[in-house]
Length: 252
Ligand SMILES: Nc1ncnc2c1ncn2[C@@H]1O[C@H](COP(=O)(O)OP(=O)(O)OP(=O)(O)O)[C@@H](O)[C@H]1O
Image 1 (cartoon, rainbow, N blue to C red):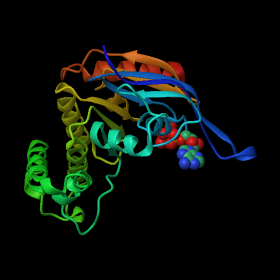
Image 2: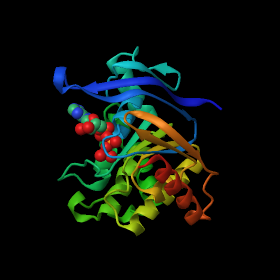
Image 3: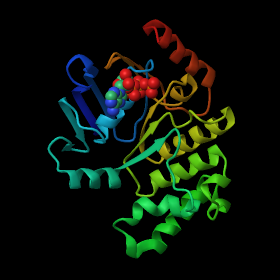
């Protein structure tokens, strides 16, 4: 199985001298193409920092990150930003979108940078995605005129616009009610079934239970992993049970 990400012994600290905080302490992680994984761990264990390191959003102090065959520490800023824009999608707890721009414009804005001439084509693709995630009728709305779940769907459309190889999600359902969270997870499962890898950072065992491999972090390292069969819509309670059992074992 080809790896989309290989992270080896990643070290990352913040601050200097007495203030130095060693956040990633030799974390190693591999993600296969098309795989759906979750990262769990206590607050402050380094989950988001690991996600930023693997996506090249942040420099690392030691170790190595190979993304789709590229060693991220040896590519220049321009190439790195190209890789991020064309091969990665990002979904955060609160989508950062601009007020006074409608939903459609917010979705297409990041893709416009090198595609100014293709507005019509990009808009068409964005409309297809909006249709797919159930927000087709909202394209002209301001971001203040939609619900949190609808805004997150728009964030997913934005992340999918360039057909990324992987979507990184940092607590993507953290701000949503149970029903919206489930619907967003259904969308992620569909995206994954079409071949896109996903890596979700989450505190929620129900979210993690929808993935096929859960990696548990403690003190800047992956200390355990749990494999599950691909989710087929059944036995969610059994899967959640396995995740929580492992969390208890590790002491999360
Ligand atoms: N840019 C930064 N500057 C200084 N310290 C940082 C920075 N980013 C993260 N940290 C610190 O690194 C540690 C790990 O943070 P990180 O956000 O990776 O943890 P996390 O496991 O994702 O936590 P949570 O579940 O609360 O989001 C925390 O102590 C945090 O305060």
